[in-house]
Image (cartoon, rainbow, N blue to C red):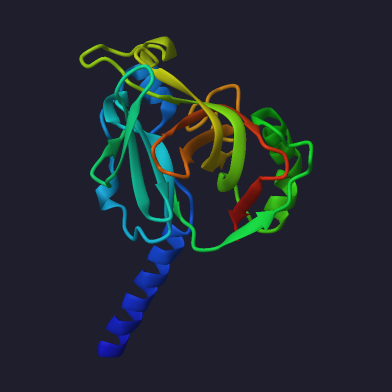
Length: 236
């Protein structure tokens, strides 16, 4: 009986590891944008295990942005049109969120033609089949370390108490910030199957950027990479 119980515990542990090795998407962007479901559907403090955890999404009530890099939880909030606050804390909820435990990454050398988000997306659309043949399933995270000439990020900052019935409503109060000559880390989500679920209807991307000094973080709108500085990784 003890042996059977021990084997059962091993099986449960293996299943848990299998579950957490897959990218999880909780909630849906369209429910926030069109149905006004701003409340948190996941408490990030409850995600276990959180070692080598990666993830991103907005703060509940659309009051900020969240980025998880290798188990470190970052939240950004708007202070003014030109300033923000970035803290490290897992005590936060999100109305939609994607996350995955990734211990090992594989570097992919990008072609010189990749210089911004459009050329990066075009490359991934063309290369995704080779990634899938190598065992990488959709959706998948990727990460980038690079120097940027310039970038634009936003932080959602929805006015408290105002209802959301459309994407225009959801973006009320949003603040955009321009970055120049920074070293950054980017976590990206790619899928051709998640438009309006975790990406907007006109893209297969969702990306969050944080600066090397961890003082600026937000949803990435646009970027111009410095040539020869991009290090691009997919889960191994």
